[in-house]
Amino acid sequence: MIAAVIADIVRSRELGDRAEAQRAIATAVARAEGDIPLALAPLTAVVGDELQGEYATIGAAVASLLLVRLNLPDGVDCRFGVGFGEVRPVELDGRTIPEGPAWWAARAAIERVETMQQRLAPLARTWVEASESADAAVRHEVALANAYVLSRDHLVSSMSERTRRLTYGRCLGRSQRDLAADEGITQSAVSQALASAGSAAVVEGFLTLSSGSAS
Image 1: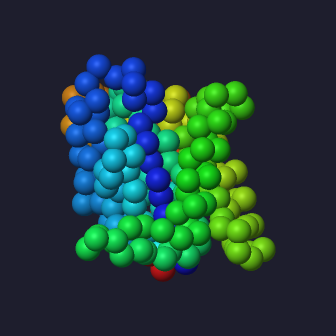
Image 2: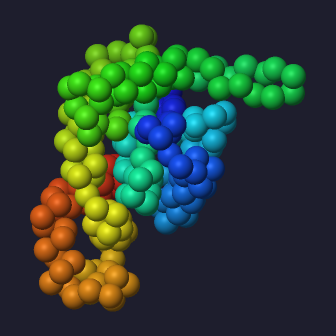
């Protein structure tokens, strides 16, 4: 059982430079994995605006996707479908094609979050689905994960690019003083930005998830 992730770019057709957006996403993924490696297979572009990756647990996937979003510049954002289940790779013409219930669930999840963005939750970016064969315990974990990511995405989607950088730094355990020096602002300004954005809750949630994923 793994957490398969399908990602795509939000409003990609409205971007002036889609290639630059894809480079920004690749940079964000590489930085997140370089700082805190959580993926079995990091998110990688596969076709068009779509990326795919694999994680050992739902917690690892959700934690890593937060780091990716915090690293993205203004004007570039992704939505993520996380599917938890079995993977049955298919060999075709010398290539291994990702396949199986985890990927089917991931596809359903990204379609669900795209629908939610249109009406129910415009700031939603992440959704988790279990495979059809998942037991009650897994379905309960998925429900808890979705309750969490809906609230988290609302906070992150409302942050400025600077506040996302500051929040990312706090996820890595950096001090407010160091972050202030990097940004060329006062420590008080850092503290105010983090407090007004609700960053403490985002950071604490990340630390809880990442510590559980590492155990």
